[in-house]
Length: 357
Ligand code: ADP
Ligand code: GN1
Ligand code: MG
Image (cartoon, rainbow, N blue to C red; front, side, top):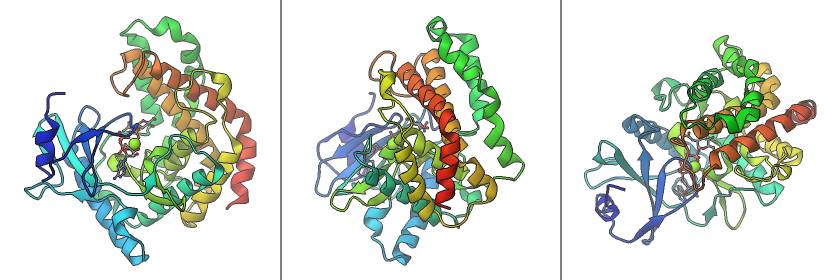
């Protein structure tokens, strides 16, 4: 760490102890234990090459959400992220070219989960993501920067994965042949959503693109969804990305990095409550092709994450934070186990989707 956190927070006119917080794989998150509390984040500038554009998107989107929440009689202090300005009135503090920081008001009395404790929690998360999408349905897509180009272009993700396999920089390939074969056997799937978007069969919408369960805060008392957070990847995208990615993480029976694959399967009860919650709030806006691809989106988003984890493992763990050796490989393995399981369940999943249309 080549920055001093006490110096950083003084730029947001706060002067208290801060400590690491949260389980994200990308940014460095800290909590300021002041009254009220704040969240300080260092934007990962290796991942987000243009932090100014990230902040421009977040400012635009949170202002829009604030207006919508007020119109709906909600509480904008809790239901959207609120940026805290620096002393000189900016939305972020640039310590140097690699170190950009921002501060948010801390959302009190709310929790984010790495794993749903019951079906209701996942249903509430689904409603929150659906509402988020709905509230941004009239946000001008052209105002948004693509903070990570081709983020969910699975075909390009596959090309990057192939490069990682070919280069085998860390000499790890020999130990992951089975996983690599699994990924290559599904290469044909990688163009399905990308092509549907290119042909205009699937519309571009304003999407979150990282709808992990721990990116939504639920109220501690009522259990209801309060706020969707982690807005760095809000970009033009497909609703299928948000739906599929949320299921990838949240409808798994176990942790993303579980080593015992007997504990990993795709849970159809969780799938059902998510589908019900998401479709109830997203608005009646889905076209036929989107509906048709909903079950497949869970498979392909899980696959995409799997090849990203495996590619990162082959590249030497440079993208996703790891806390132990082999963690990205373990993550890839759970994703592929889920993909294989989803493949056997796509028919049932389609029936469930039809129930809630
Ligand atoms: P990352 O991009 O690394 O995933 P997040 O923005 O998701 O970072 O933040 C990491 C964690 O910090 C979240 O899962 C959540 O628990 C917590 N968090 C983030 N922002 C807030 C906030 N405004 N109020 C309360 N907790 C927050
Ligand atoms: C990262 O930042 P976090 O932990 O919410 C990643 C997502 C992956 C996810 C896998 C910007 O999300 O795309 O799906 O890890 N975010 C970025 O757990 O790459
Ligand atoms: Mg996060």
